[in-house]
Length: 330
Image 1: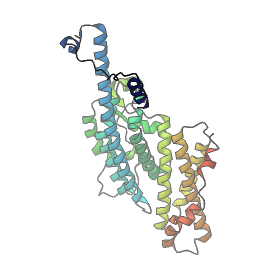
Image 2: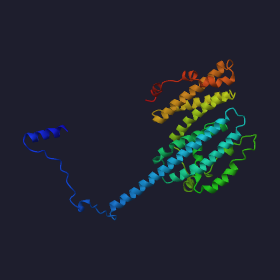
Image 3: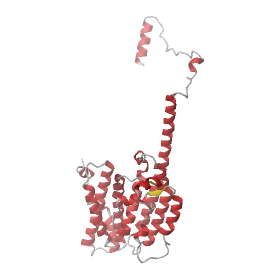
């Protein structure tokens, strides 16, 4: 703006009119006419192929994201169902209900996801289905812990997500024999009843041809197990409210083993570092609860122990700054 004023003043000083910015008009229709594209050109045909491939990948990614969201929602519902086991002597009714939800989840969500990933690079779409996969691992790990008090390994998790290519008939055959009547009480827990193996074959060569699967990288399994410890902490506190004073000690032992194993890893990703920090905080809360049970259990009524554990003062006393924790991983 200043340069224009200076230029105008210079022209007026010499008795000349300043020149206006000239916009060149359109010279003719020939300059407006688009260039003809030769569709038979090898370059154009190659770009058409790339266009179709990119569109296909984007569409598949959107479908996978939607499936992952549904898996996350259903897995959370299963976790809420399993939390009702706190303080129950007969957990089979709740486990049967959760198992039926697992069956529906396999049939309606995981099998379509396996078909979407069939023949594709799973790591290319890992960010799309990672949240749902982690939530599922958390729910399945929680289910098996309530069943046999053990931590399910990654191989068993993978076996749950291996499906025959024509799964509709297989699901119809598996479900009635796997899930018995919920209203029928059972005196002994049948662990094989809760071991769902839709594949039915351990031959790797035949499995590649006749089966599809949802891959589970070790990192996703570890993230799901880290989230599972949060559910253990909630269950331990809920069990105290239900006057079950033995479960917190059992939960504490498992959480200590998991925390010790996670702390042995070095140079870990940021997401796993954050979950490990939360794991340590959950462990300290359970340790605080067990300490209060041993030292002050006879002083405080049982129905008031939950309020003591969940109070801000008792929990914040054992929390620590995140910066101190990160120093071990830098």
